[in-house]
Structures are given as structure tokens and as C-alpha cells.
Image (cartoon, rainbow, N blue to C red):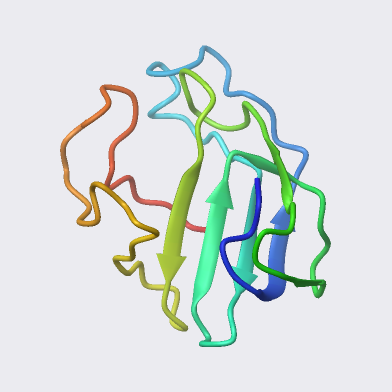
Length: 121
């Protein structure tokens, strides 16, 4: 996984494995995932979930720099990345990079993950 912008690593969580039972049986259980959270110069955060970090908290990163490797942590049926953008108060915001589905929905567009899945990253 590579950083989409310059910033400072705010959180780098590792050590979480795959959820017992796998998806979808793990939906009602607490199944923490590994992730990297980077604060950009604009004060906003970009979060990369299901990633084993190769960076440390406080480290400066640049756009395109490797920040980790995708993994099978948390509740999932197959490898994928959840990428989120949060404002300075940790509220989710829409963004594009470009993105074919820039507006979160409450539908399972890929039959595997809810696009509007609540999280605490």
C-alpha cells in the first residue's frame, strides 16, 4: 500500500489477525483490523485499513511512499483495502482519487463489504 498524499503517520496499528469464522459470521463480533492513519498538511486524515504498517507513528511520509502491505486482518472474506478520509474532528468525508463510487451508500455494491461500514479508525 502506498500513501496517496504527504503527511505524518498518526496511527500505525498491527498485530491483528483474521477474524475467527471469517466473513460474514464475524460481523457481530469485535474483529479489529490493522491500519495506518496519516494526517495531511490540510489537517485531514487518510486511513488505510487491512494493512500491516511498515511506517511508525510520527514518521513523515510522501505521496507514493510504501506505508505497508495488505493483509487479512479483521472481518473480511477476501483481501481488499478500506480507504477513508476523515476531517480534523474524525468525521468521515467524501473524497475522490478518482473514485467510481464517491458517495457512500448503505448497499453492498460488491456483495462483500458495506460501503458505509461504520468504523472507529
